[in-house]
Amino acid sequence: MPDTITIFCRNNHVHVDVPAGSSLTEIYKAVGSPLACTPMNAHVNNKTESLAFRCWKPKDVEFIDLTQSSGIRTYVRSLCHIFSKATSEILPSATVCLKHAVSNGYYCVIEGKPFDRQTIDRIKQRMQEIIDVDSPFLPHTLHTTEAAELFRQQGMEDKARLIETAGMNYTSFYDLDGYIDFFYGCLTPSTGYVQLFDLVPYADGILLRVPQKANPSELAPVILQQKMFDAYKEHQTLQRMLGLNNVADLNFAVRQGRSSEVIMVSEAVQEKQTAHIAGEIARRYRDGVRLVLISGPSSSGKTTFCKRLGIQLLTNLIHPVGISLDDYFVEREDTPRDKYGEYDFESLYSLDLPLFNSDLKQLLAGGEISLPSFSFETGHRQYKGNKLKLKANSVLMLEGIHALNPELTAFISDSFKYRVYVSALTSISLDNHNRIPTTDNRLLRRIIRDYRFRGYSAQATISRWHSVRRGEDKWIFPYQENADVLFNSAMLYELAALRSFAEPILQEVQENEPAYAEADRLLRFLRYFNHICERDLPRTSLLREFLGGGSFGY
Image (cartoon, rainbow, N blue to C red; front, side, top):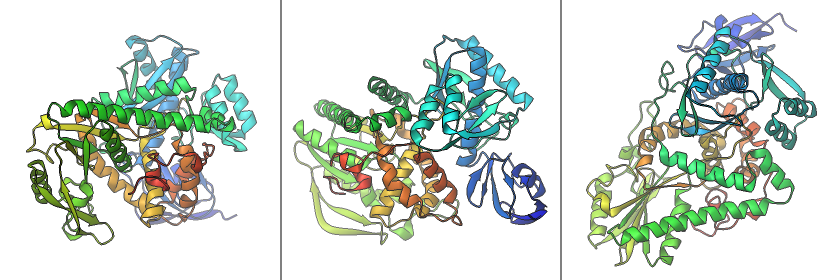
């Protein structure tokens, strides 16, 4: 074993010799502390590791701070551990549940004990005391049977059941001054790394506020997202009714042969909601609505929703006519670029707005148009002889990420519009402290679809995802609360069904590729889901948009 090893720091392209066994915290100082913000973790040979990780061999290292998604995840996990410990001390025997991201924070509930604003302030004060002491998060690894027993002794049945159903021999967890917790990703070395947070009352729970990614020195502003919050609550009510509060419950249902029941109920809920939306459009049709605007972020399932909505509209004696905004892209060479010099396909101005508005006016005036078709392979618009004209009982459905942007249809009165926002709001959690980000759900859908139908590797899709997310933050999310209704396209069972498709695709990403850290994280995440067989999915399922084998053409 050599006394020293060579580390290459990708942040500042520096090679440095350090003692073998140096921690990443020590290595960060040795390479000159190259980040403007405090690092949260590091990618070691493109694999995410805690800053407490020790290097015994030469490595490539990239330090990650709060301006990157991986850094935010580490920060939030560490903050959640502190929050849970503080709550257990202020409200013994209460159960903390981190539910979902909303209003630029994380909605939490405390079950088993009443609380008020004064209680929240006491928890916040205790959290600050824990942070000020700068106590270490001590990692431990035990055989899963021992870890499960330890969690049960601490009253954490949800964690015990999760690790038991995941099928792994050993389980890692963290100890904070005697309070243990489990997370499927790394934490900061100690509590002192968590310097900025807040707790505020939110609905019947608490909003855990965190730094904003663009400016980590400030808390992300609280914004109203009532429609999103209501959609989450509705699905969680369904989960409780089915006894599926977390992934362990889903795994037990799969093992007990209840997969078909879970699938049928999930699909029926979506069909019921689609039918309700169609009924609302039919009612508003009598008041003059002729334009249905359908928006949502990438891989939210907008296309299949449109097709299923069209069928439900027909049962209401309304003739649906659909247009995809993707067919109105400008020529590839005319596509605007972002500040990084990359094509900005998420920009509103990547659409040929003059052509779109001309066609839209002509259609609504009773005229006929030649419908364009955009080829993503060639980057050019084509005309294939498709004509479009509205009938007397028609509504025009416009589907695309910019459909809710007021600028797109500014010349049309709001009284003629009905707006739908589609998003995959994943409501099921791994356990009480490990929520599942909706972006992970959508990213897995996109990785599978891109690989199976567009010829893109997981490396290509993951590398592009950061640009997609930037575009969504700028062009889509600000308008989601403009919708008349929010349609949740996520299903309780879907990650268990996606696992068999996603794993072999993600495993193709090589260690020397930049996307390896994200691919590795997603693979580790998917291990907690027991497989649901694809053949059990209905041919009309929204998931067929990404998996194939469906009744609809795409």
